[in-house]
Image 1 (cartoon, rainbow, N blue to C red):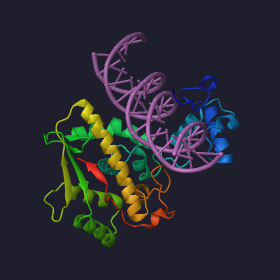
Image 2 (image 1 turned 120 degrees about the vertical axis):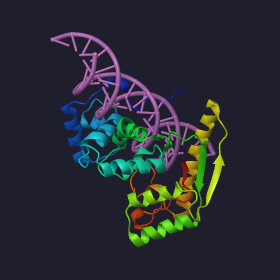
Image 3 (image 1 turned 90 degrees about the horizontal axis):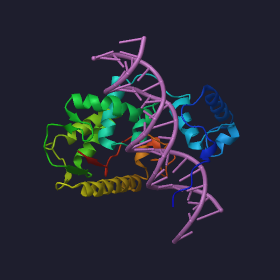
Image 4 (image 1 turned 180 degrees about the horizontal axis):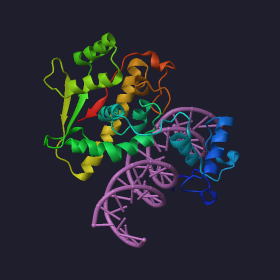
Length: 254
DNA sequence: AATCAGGGCAACCGCCCAGGG
DNA sequence: TCCCTGGGCGGTTGCCCTGAT
């Protein structure tokens, strides 16, 4: 028994959007605003699925979108954020004004993956592809290292990318003073086990997000400066007021 | 000039989750 | 508490363009 379709597919257009459809959608949203995507197509006179309208608006028609090539700085920021967040494209997109999750996802798959591979880095793990170390999951506890990073950020006012860079460098240096890591060494896995591990990882990531939220009353989304979006579920409507990134409890698969 | 292969990207699909009744 | 709905997300598909042969 499947889920009921989001719309009546028999009477909807598919494929590329025409100029006229774009114009209708833009005109409707300008007049009525976003929201209620299911009823929007009918109200706007479009033979499209509501989800299709939403996607078209978010990924292509929104006026605040930045078109054009990614800069080198954006590349590096995407790589750093991906190393911390994994395939959380919407979270990554939240740190890149004018870029969409879909755009970043495509850009990652077509450009950055290749770029990392050419540098000898595995894009999935952000480790050297020549390393033959076992699969290691590292959980970062509240340690002096974290406090130091936070203090450094406060005192120097360094931006996110520098801060993340510091964090990453610190974590890639196991001998760093005061580093407090929980290490879980995975056994060699079969395909089924791999799936179970993935599920466990997803659960841990979710609970880590909850941990952050409970700890500070802020969600990870807000910690990253994202008030809008799915990951922002915190109680604090002034999410940006917290000037410190807090990755405590955030796990990272290296 | 025609054909083929590969890359880039817009769009779709299926699933998940929060919120409301 | 359960069920349904809407919104959102990540993964995948397929079309189009470009360069090579």
